[in-house]
Image (cartoon, rainbow, N blue to C red; front, side):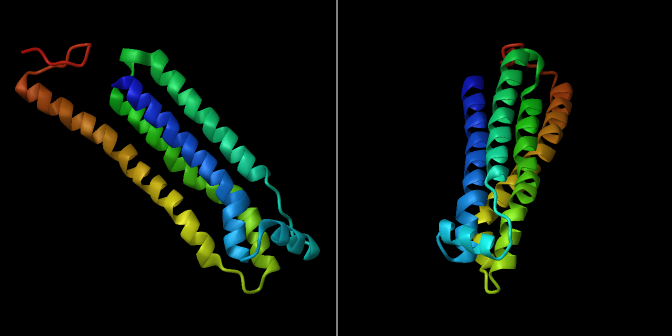
Length: 171
């Protein structure tokens, strides 16, 4: 079960990072400008605005690295890292993805807004909204994980049940 949790955690962080990179480098720029990417870049350059895919590459690279570091830490820590702490760290990575996405994507979308007077910010927001919603849900999980662990331990103390090292409860 732990291996499935680790695989799902890594895949979700990597998916967030890769989708975010495509979003900021391609999809949001095309949606906001309402023209193909090559045309938008040419128009931005002609207007003296800046476009760079570096933010997306950095976002994806750091996201993938964080996913792998998280998995390595959860695997190496094994039984000494409680499940709630692993969940909280995973959720923290996804939560901070929204902040990183905002700052990494700001330059390109700002250039689109400065280039096109009638740019479609709502179209870009419609594409980006799911990333922010995922980060908000992850924030809720990050805040709930230690609370669930705390109240679960209190209930166990009251009932006198203590989980074994393998996660089972003695009968």
